[in-house]
Length: 272
Image (cartoon, rainbow, N blue to C red; front, side, top):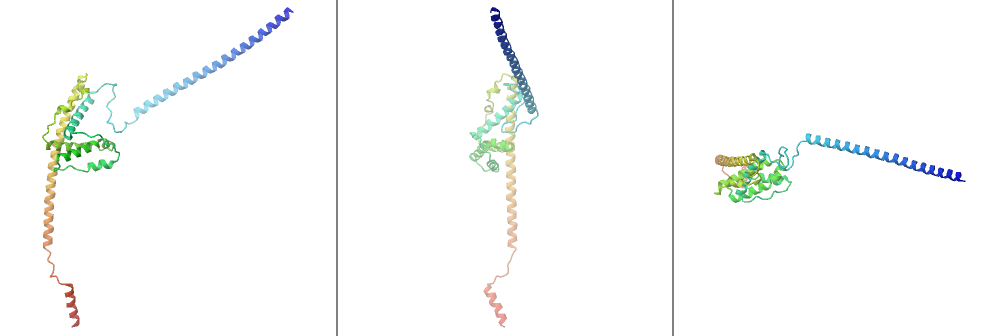
């Protein structure tokens, strides 16, 4: 009897051990397959990310720069670092902007219109020598407000040239003297820790003054040319008018007769 009970216990222990072994074996097999699948998936994600990064970098290196409303980008540099070229360009731009603002009295906000007709219509208005200061300022403010649209339509150079001419005409008509110190007030460059940046900013201001002088000289030359052209046109108009007058005076028509009288004379001849 005891042998039978012992044999049954051994059988049950063997069965339980076999079940546990099979369960552990299946757990290890399934867990290993799952871990292997996760490892392969992570490897694929890592390889895909590396490929996309390399393609993006190659595209940025070969793609041309965007032509939008912003100014042309400066050479690449570390964040927060200011180059001497940027400071020099800023100095010239600040000086010119201060000169324009001084003579226009105020600078209006930019127009955000994409219709080129407003731009071309404003540029088609040529300032005349007989315009007063108020009319010139009104035209100058209109030009300034269209700089964004002019940049969008590749007409910024033409608009800036016209704006410089208008402001130069105002400067010749008024006694207001422009203080060049107003064109160098940007603390970002004026008190920059890099001496080269500060020097470049001051050099840019001097360049801006030279550009202003060139604009005034060009406006005066254009005014003289316009006056000479106007005088020549008026002289030619007088000559042509006199020639037409002389041609008209050489025409002597025959003595006029009434049509009724001529008919009566012809009828009398027929009766005879």
